Image (cartoon, rainbow, N blue to C red):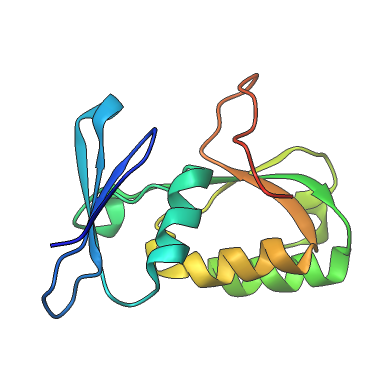
Length: 138
């Protein structure tokens, strides 16, 4: 079994169908089982941004998406509408930061990452008011 030990987490590679491993977060004494639908790199990206990864059902993985800046309004509306599976109105983004109850985004990690890399908007996940943003590469 392969392992990686970092400052804030430990990764253990599982070798069975349907899993790409387990993250252990010592500060929270939490184990996060990672599925196999996306890459380890995407899971680590989501973890670093605060996406809720723990929970067996959709209702156990709620997320709040906070849009802090919009760089391309039409592209942001289209990306969010696709991501949230509902029409997003421009008026929802008129006053920033805009807090959107996004629900379970576990299976939307690649889409979230694409939205960030496209640079249509800046967003944060599950951050309370006044909390500094997590370190990001952008």
